[in-house]
Length: 510
Image 1 (cartoon, rainbow, N blue to C red):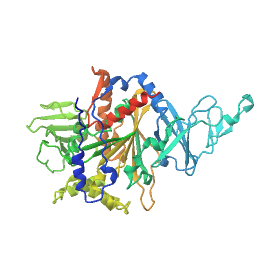
Image 2 (cartoon, rainbow, N blue to C red):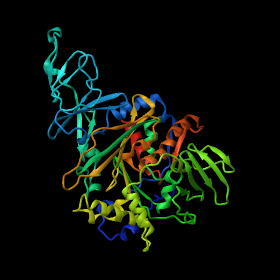
Image 3 (spheres, one colour):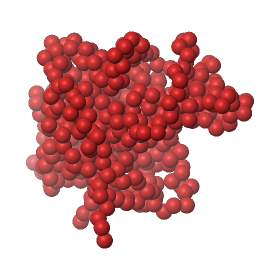
Image 4 (cartoon, helix red, strand yellow):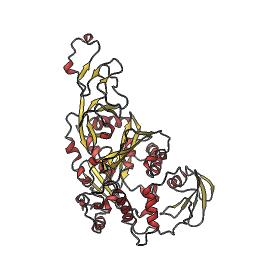
């Protein structure tokens, strides 16, 4: 039987690289496509408590996982609880360049030692009965120790979990027999040569509970396939449906959204009027979405049919009854202030007499902005490094590449298999003059809050509104479907496929 070949966009991608005017980092030349599928995933894995408990035993108690960032713990004695899937650990800065992590439980009756972060502690004292430990984990004091005959102080140090560090992130692993952290992440750091994560600080950190399984959310942010239907406004910037290169390497995977490999057959539409009104067009079918007021959008089809819709895409009047709910939200939902980049891009796009590709134009603007922050390397950055390059380190950490600030983490919320915590962290380049003030606190949004209530995320907040509208409905659909398995695309869903290959491997380990 003939072996089915691996489908990739590698040839077109390398042709794009050959057009670059600046040197390309070696990592961008690597090709490591996933093997052909199919990949089928049992639907029950997204809501079964039995499978959730199996994940706790086989994944969360054994895998390396990002727990904190150095900016969370600036001073000796600072500590931060890390909770996941009913487990809890306490990350503590014990010296100027040393961090430890302990099981977050008193050795007396099991009370959590700390519920929230704290600063410059000189001891970790349990609020229940007062047992206390030094920040290095050694026992400090047991009130009424005479009442514990046979207790050996030398055996009462706080149990530690292993700690690993990369790019100012602090990872933990509860498994005492785990592989070395450096082996686990492999050559991931080699993709960040020009601006290593060690030279970035935490600019923003926003978190929100999402009513879906952690894998449902985790997978939604791994691929570009969903952009076509969920974020069609992005397609107007020069990125179309065959423009993301996918590769897998050991415990991590990579996507490079090129923004220039336009597919054939995409419809061409006339420009929209430039009259100051909020309008956008769905590039797939030509429908135009116009904001009438907050919560009210009028949609007009190319053949002249019209409809008015509320923020949830419910038809209020007209002969159009079905439209894209994500574009209704984009046009009619709460707006965010335009960033300096957006303003500069819009202005330069208007004056784009040389017809420079939007990808190159965006790179020029970002490079110009970075000259004020990291002037020594700004002019060395190739255009491709300003595109969307997003990695996934198994199981749940998503550092974005090159000069994009985005990082994601998705973790179970308590022991409920149908809730998770989604976190977006912005990492910005540390200015070469050394002047910066990192974000120290997480901005928690309520479960029903709009993402635009986190203005520090800029336009990404509106993108999240589109993504998060899907996720509870995906979770509900898992219960409603007649299918036993989900089915994943061979290439466009390379990263979720790779994730499930690793998940299966971990679940089946002895």
